[in-house]
Amino acid sequence: MPSATTKHTAKDVMTPDPVCIRPSATIRELARLFEVNEISGAPVINQAGMLIGVVSKTDLIRKCAEGTVDIPPAYLFEALAEQGENDEEENEYIPEPIVCVEDFMTEHPLTVTPETPLREIARAMVDGRFHRVVVVNEESAPIGVITTLDLLATFS
Image 1 (cartoon, rainbow, N blue to C red):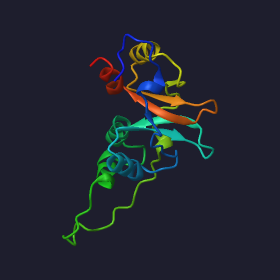
Image 2 (image 1 turned 120 degrees about the vertical axis):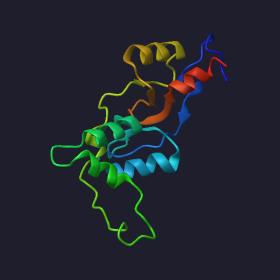
Image 3 (image 1 turned 180 degrees about the vertical axis):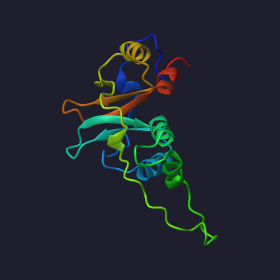
Image 4 (image 1 turned 30 degrees about the horizontal axis):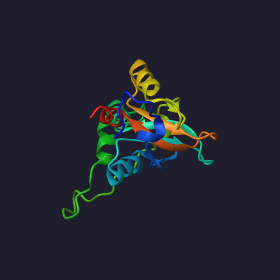
């Protein structure tokens, strides 16, 4: 792992080929994406593959805790819960509420290029209180992700 005192850049520590999600994905799809890929956040991309936001488990939990004007928080949590497989009474289908990623994603995530120095990335993360940075190419398509843990690993 590179030393934080050297001239390393985003491409040296980023996780390449990030798992992304569309803004129209439902909260259930988002929760499944996080679980299956063992991640806590993902870039949100439009149909052209361009970055339009970022979403995290914290965002998902916050949205479920707040609910919406029409949907109480308990219903959102219930929609995410595993359905009972053996108990017929509990095996009723719970319709998924129409809450999409675009309803609670962060619209202007911190982005960097592959050549951005790690010191600059660390400073921007601290100043903006970001836990995740999306590395983008010239077309604003996500090509990598850097988390606070990725940066901390450079010190070991």
